[in-house]
Image (cartoon, rainbow, N blue to C red):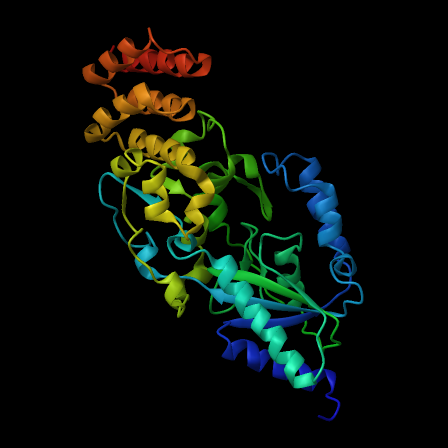
Length: 386
């Protein structure tokens, strides 16, 4: 094959990526992300990323220098895959009593393997076309690459004020992937778009996690607490979690750019069995049941104890009286993490039955913080009945 120009090669890559099922594809240079590095390190040092032990200074340094990821890197192919499935969303719909909400992206199969398989196929096809092995490393969101920085610089989308990438016609309902390559490709320019004066995401966040435009305090985010937090969720956060048990879509649901998002075409993202999950059923799961119901989905990341903790909070927030017997069982039989949140939930539901359950277990509980939750709940019920 005759030597292809940078623009011809870029055009072939884009056409191939779309044929392989990607919805968005743009290209940027492999220059360092100096500005994004400073921004990320500032947020890290300010404590906004507390609770993510893997998000370190060295990770940021490596992820903003493509040469460290692939020596000889010249270009970055930025890819986007729409995951929006209307049946998974709470937009313009009411949820069944006694069920918990799961973020749209997590109701389908885990996306990492699927996207990486498609990226690998793209690299293999390019190697075949060029008649030589293409140097490449590919990443989704489980590697050091600053995916949103690359997407922004490539023009695949722009930063929304909730820190998500917004892409024309798709919005932020998009999985991002990057292929760092030694190919010298024609690059695309960043979009000249912004959110303007819109602050819907900031106004709608129940915990105030978007502390300023483009600044997210991870320690206040519902998604962080329901997925990454392995310990007790702060009491001040719990009432704001409403019935979210894995992730949160509120800032995406209110975003005007997201209103016209098309439905995903990926069968693995179109599963709907997790749209309304029974909170009581979650509390009744054992490890085998957890794997049976959620294996292959992102929900496995929360672990069974974390999902039960979240279900307790949702029952407390919805004040679902039918959940009292199962919360009582949790308070007597489950792990310390679940017991403490079951005590909190009973305090939110209140009533004579909840009081009796809490008083009885107070004399047998040995974990200090769980006993504190029990006493706080008893005091709260007493204060609410005066």
